[in-house]
Image (cartoon, rainbow, N blue to C red; front, side, top):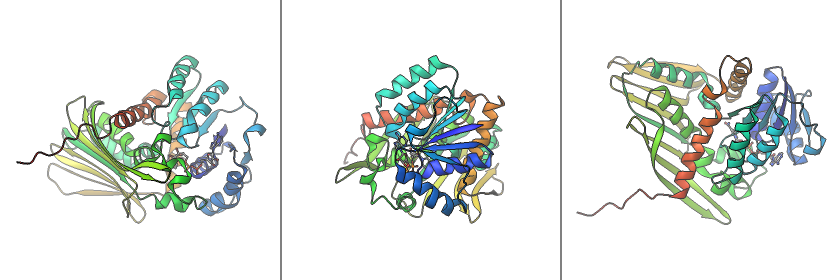
Length: 355
Ligand SMILES: NC(=O)c1ccc[n+]([C@@H]2O[C@H](COP(=O)([O-])OP(=O)(O)OC[C@H]3O[C@@H](n4cnc5c(N)ncnc54)[C@H](O)[C@@H]3O)[C@@H](O)[C@H]2O)c1
């Protein structure tokens, strides 16, 4: 299995290490030679203990096109679609696009969709890895088995001060230096923490609540120097079943809270990322009975390994890419919510009338 990873940044390192755990042959491409050096000398050895000298690091002019089974695009969102269109021409078996799929209102997304539907050789998946981990798989199973009865509502939060991201990128002085500080490039809370929107739609589907149909959004927009981004994004979502739920994403909360709760007619299910010193917690109660708590020991790199195992299952035809929790369609649906929100920010929030 030959893999090309475009982007030698934070996610490029995770994807490379997870691919190596699979025993795959890895080439990492970056336009910035400093990023390639940083990967070899700093990020990879510090995160995973040692550099893996089987990984090839190259600038784009040095890589032969068309010889890869899988291409993964771990660049900032606003440059992803142009690279994705190029990648489709190489016809890999799998094209993995990091999240969010792209920036809001990207004209190249429309071209990509048309080209992808015509091309038919490549399966596209998104980098929404949280949907593939064992804790969320457990939540999904409980919902599918209707352990908590009929689901009434669903809440998902990804609330994380972005100091963690900047600690992982010490060469950046702040949001203005990167796409993160620009919602128009796919940054800000709504784009960066769109894992929450993605989990919401995935679990709503698993719970039998249907797909999302209506949205009220509130985006707290910050303008700092050239930067313009949403620090808090709150979404109230109506589903085709008529049920209502909520997603909150922010880049201000400290300590971090990545959490979800599903309320049913006869119980609840809750997930708390890093809720235990060894990993995540899933709690649930049925029929008013005692709360059961399950701990899923894992570290962040394990999430990307799970993602690669899942991709291997798609390659082995054990799972259809279009049925996968990280299907292209699931990433596109998140973009539809982001575009709806940015087109009419805060439009459905009316002032409260004085009595
Ligand atoms: N799935 C996850 O959990 C997860 C985790 C972290 C980041 N991400 C996503 O991955 C993307 C990148 O984030 P990051 O933190 O790794 O960013 P980063 O800035 O650390 O790395 C991005 C790299 O892409 C390179 N690049 C830019 N344009 C390029 C081009 N045309 N060709 C080749 N390389 C190019 C840059 O030089 C840089 O080294 C974002 O969309 C982010 O949201 C996903």
